Length: 89
Image (cartoon, rainbow, N blue to C red):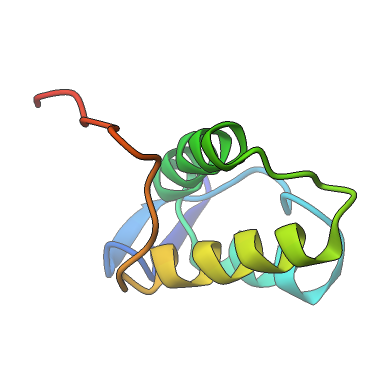
């Protein structure tokens, strides 16, 4: 199992098996984001895309999601789908 120092949780955790997409941003995620944090981001991204009716063909929508992703991994305030209530732990 590959380990990374996850920038979201600031601890060593299981890493992704491969970069999630090509380029330097994909490599940065591969090197610094845990498998758990990536999964959490993917779930939030799906909610944002669906709720806000974002299109990956629209450069502004892609930029918005990239900004939200960076904020999510940095533990900064991010948008959430309206009315979303996280499941109780």
